Length: 469
Image (cartoon, rainbow, N blue to C red; front, side):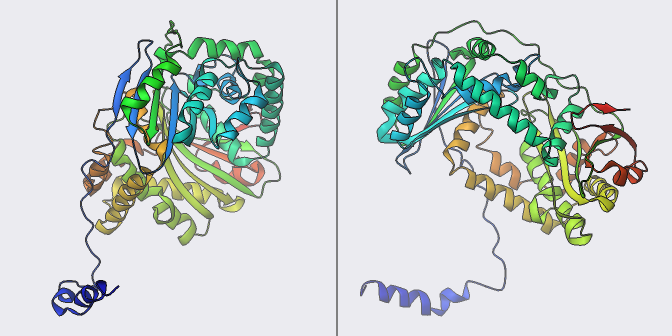
């Protein structure tokens, strides 16, 4: 302590040091890091499995994430099969039944779960690095040798049907499904899981889906944690080398037909005292070269409390508790959505304000302070996300999955920090047209339809998403 005090005195009481800092002015932000995204090792196994190793010794943990290039849009005529596969992967294998498998994972203090998205199915496990060997054995067993027990399938089918029934009472879920149906009508991204499709799925069809799409040459595996590539790769080869390569069907994939004109799609929910609103349109796919810059543009419009939608609809007009916007990106097509939950009597005015803010983004240059705030927010948020092992693993795999440039994430922060007002206007004109939009409303039709009809053509739906003439 005696050694420290003189130094502290020097720092605290030296006038020259104090003169260099003007605490009345906000300090200028430093430049975005050139390459905050970590380096990684890449290897392809003889069976075609692509493996990425990200060495990170900050925590004594390991995360493994396997991605299969098939998801919900590969379900065919029975929506829900990919979700069943993901839900049942950890419910019994050729070696362990559901109970024994769960106990084995719990005994390691680990997690092992899977989920299906539109384009892919991801299986993830995390645990302490000292349990890498048994965890890897369980992980490979779930991926390669699931048995989809009949009793577990029946339980999952019942649970899914119950969840779908609950969604019929959830206006947010209804709005999201109606948006999917409207934006991607007739497209493989437009499939909606229904009670009828779930009841029609059989256990054998779920097993067949796994047999068709789960192949090492149709997958990638990312490992991140306190490991060395030279040590972990032989273990990966041992665990997954037995996974046999196979011919995977080639699916005809294409973008969606663009929405034309302004239409309003109203799902009647009698007795509802508020409306769920989504103003949406198609957007670019995941490999869009504007993606980093679009984050800043979207944040200005609808990025949380500081976004224009929130400031307008809540702070200025009091129409809603909150309003925001986002882009969703899939492999072959994406979408834009601006959302709000409003009282019935202000549903139409809220829609008009959302459209007005979209137009303002296109017609008026953003101010310097507003732009700088959102640039800093997005760069900071991105750098903070690199602390999450799962997010890092996902991004490493995204580079291969979506065919992104090798330095995509190394330049990500720098690109966001370089966005200027002209770029924001350019992107808004490109992606935020209000001429070709679908407006989704879930609410009491008798109260909201008359005013909505003054904005555009209203198409009505029932709770099963059937159009009502």
